[in-house]
View 1 (cartoon, helix red, strand yellow):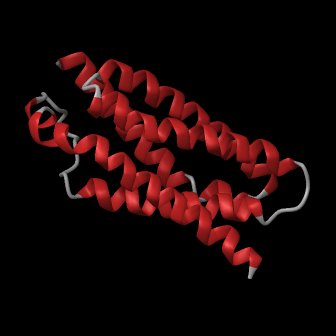
View 2: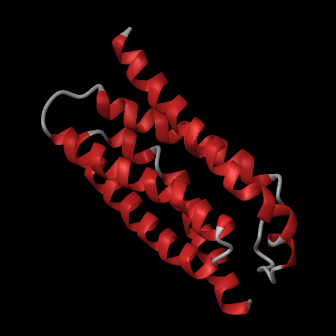
Length: 154
């Protein structure tokens, strides 16, 4: 039962953080973001909650599998997971709440680095945890590009 709790609880926390981050986006999504010049590669708005729901689910399962490991190797992975989760949450504040795409870009680049470090750390101790981060890495690549585009063209 403990092994399942180690997966369910982090998954719930990731989904909760994602839901909380939406709070900081809501006003800007109506009053600011629609008026920005965006790339033609910007997905439709409906894609964002679907993609993030899947990503938060994968994130929670990934760290839950790490929690189920024995040994000291998991400490570093847990540390980088927490760092990336922090930058994940603060990106919404930087970009949407402060309506500052440049601050958002700095934040997302730090997020990219933390996610990649976490993934590399996991690969040596729990390959499945690393693979669960690949949808996140792909989505972040797109998000970093879109954020950069907004900084350049607005």
